[in-house]
Length: 370
Image (cartoon, rainbow, N blue to C red; front, side, top):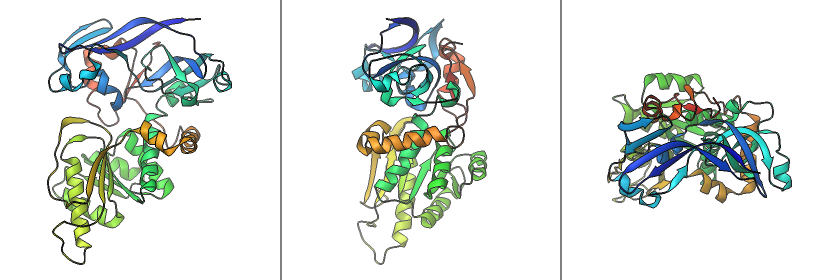
């Protein structure tokens, strides 16, 4: 049995052309532990934009019904040499109904159920997914469950990472995001101290209304003194940065060191011996990461990805986190959307130039059958 439906693909050619297109595709019958999901909703996450849009110029792109061709500038073209010529699906996660399964017991148990899944090609009318990566939604709609993996599991995994590394406090940048709001709720539930860094007063107010104790506005003139005070009060020397480019991580490391130095008994030319670490888990800013020699020698900047973390944490932890998400879909892990688009509407100039900005509270939801 095969099934036919629309699917979105992205192709970057060696001559610098990024092509996004919706085409009719044939989907094979699921085998083994696979399920075939009729996709009903899929969010456009920042993690999707790396292959969907990257730094391409969509202002001068050529638009037609269900197809866009845009120019990819350097150094982003050569930096993605590994994908040149590859026609790739897109859409990390989504939700829909399981309409066929492989022959494993786990897969068969999902037949007819509405599930959230992480197929990697969720911008599609159908998707093959691994039953192990499917979360039954029960009575919840696909819209409610569409964003139930990437952001919820990432926020939970930040807290797990902190605990595994011996920390009881976290710093989070761009903290008013959908993920940031979830992280606030989790930290309040788990007793993990959290320092939130935002850029607007309205975001300060938003997080305060959610019960956040420490919210720092990086646009304020006294940003660094606010940050030092929050670090001193919480003992937060571990941070998570989705911005990547610029000096955001640099400023946090500097504030960490300034606090740590005040706690030293004697001067050291090497700086404090306090471990200071910033994980970068996104590139909202595609510019270079700028670091300055202002925080001694006991510091780290590292990359962080959800899938490798889950592999390291193990199946027991992964199941525990997934169960927590399932039980709190409409509370702690609730998501909201600015707009809904179908596959063709997703590739209009108006939509692309809007959702690629990744503004707080303005996530798009793709509904493939609309």
